[in-house]
Length: 410
Image (tube, rainbow, N blue to C red; front, top):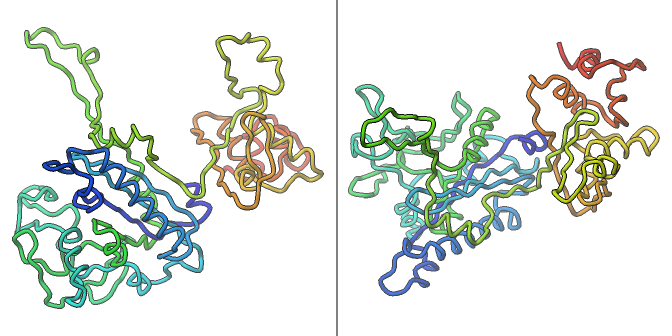
C-alpha cells in the first residue's frame, strides 16, 4: 500500500501458471518420468519463465513504462507454482479509458488466421465447461437450491469494453458465432479467460491479464496476492473415549507441495517489490529497541550512545544539522538517503537507486505512539521529539495535544 500511496492504483493484474508440458521441462525428464516426478526441474524452469516475464514487463515495456511492480509466488495443492503480478504504470503509459484496455487484454477466441494462438487459448484460456454443461465442476458453488460458477462464467456478450458499477471491467465479447470444442463441450466467447495474445504466444501457458479499472479494486487485489499459504486446524481424538482436552490436542498445519519444497531449498524469491519498500521505526523517546547479545553486559550496552541510535533519532539529527532542516517528511527521507544499519547513520543516496519509505503500523489503542506517528506523517523537518510537540512556539505536554492543535484530530 506504500507503493499505491506513492504511485497510485495498480493498472494491471497478471497471473502466470506453470505448464507441466513445456518442452524445457519434458526435455530434461528421463524415460518414463513425468513432470510431477521432478519438482526440482519444474521449479527451475518456472523461475526462468518468471524472470523472462519480468524482463518483458520491466525492460521491454510491453505495457508501457512501469512505475512500480510487485509479484508473489504461490503453489497449488497439486504442486504447480503460479505467480501474481500487480503493475503500476507511469503517467504517460496509463490506461485512461476502456478503449485502451483492448490494446493489452483480449477476451475472444482468436481468428483462424492465427492457429497457434488458437490452440494455446483452447488449452489454457477457456474456462469450464461448468454450469448446466457440467454441474459437478469444481468452480460450482451452491446457493440454496441453485448453483452458480464462483468466477461468473459464462460471461455476458458485450459489443465493447466497459466498466461496471462495481469498478471492474467488462471486456469485449462479441457474439461472432465462433465456437470451439473444449473438454467435450462447445464453448463461445463467453467462456474465454482474459489474456494478452503476445504473452500467451510467448509462454504457452495460462497467463491471465486483467485491467484494474478503478481504485475500488485496490484493497481486494493486495489482500489477494498477500493472502499467504493454505492452513488447516486439526486435532487428534483418542480412541478410548476419555475426556478430550482440545487445547492440548490442537494442532496447526499447512500443505507443502514437493515443488514448493524444491523452490525453498533453492532459496528462490517468494516475492519481489520494485522499487523496494523500507520499514521505518516509530518509537517514543527512550523506548527504542536495543539488541543484547549473550556475551554482552547490560550496563555497557546502555552506556553505548551508538547503540541508542535509530532511524528516527538519526532523522532528527540530520535535520538539526541543517538550518531549517532538509525539508522532507519521515516517510520521504529514505528516497534521498540510505540507512546504514551497521554504522547507525543515514548516507546520501546515489541517483541510480530508489526506495519508498513506510512507517511501521501503530494501533490507535497504543495512545501516544499512535499520535507520534500521526505527527511524523504530517510535519516536515522535525529536529527532535520536542519539536514535534511544539505548535506555534508552544511546547505541548503530549503528542496528542499537538495533533489536536494542528487539526490532525477532530
